Image 1: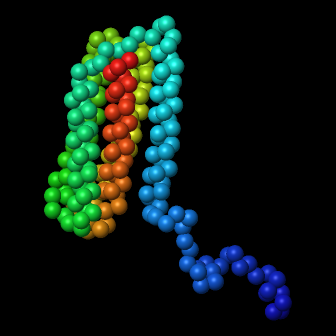
Image 2 (image 1 turned 180 degrees about the vertical axis):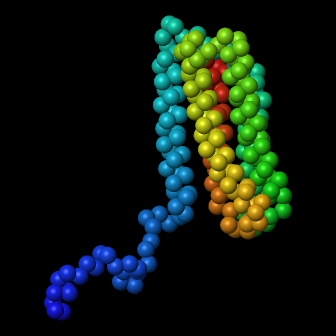
Image 3 (image 1 turned 45 degrees about the vertical axis):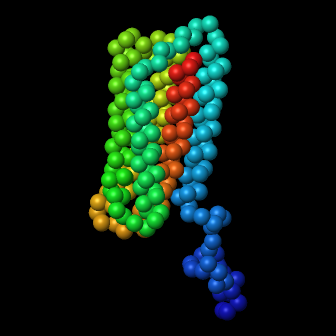
Length: 204
């Protein structure tokens, strides 16, 4: 009977720590930080491919450059302000304090939302001028690249909203420190991508 039990035993179904060892991750850092790093790499590749496609497509004879909308300058300033405020919030939680954290965090999200509103107004102005998505390949690339950037920004705002709600609910600074740090890093990335897109769209 004892021999039968040893043969039919399934050690892989046992739960708990095996051999007294605790499980360790492959990376000596937070899983969320690793996931964001991989995501930023993928996003960088995607935007790079669109940029290369933009340069290749503009060499064809049917390409008609899109005049730079003046609104883009204001939109850029809004995104810069949002990134600066996120960095301020990151510095606050990094020092273990909470003074002005809510102001910095809410302000960062508000400026990001205003940036998206500014982008929508720019798209409306272009359509009012007869510059539609299908009017010209340059128009199509403009809507595609700025729209893709706005979608990434909306994804970041979802994480920002969760962190802000937790802070308003009385969460400790240590509980949302990682979320704020990752939001700041993500916003700096989106600002860098936007500056490249802005320079690309404004000079071609």
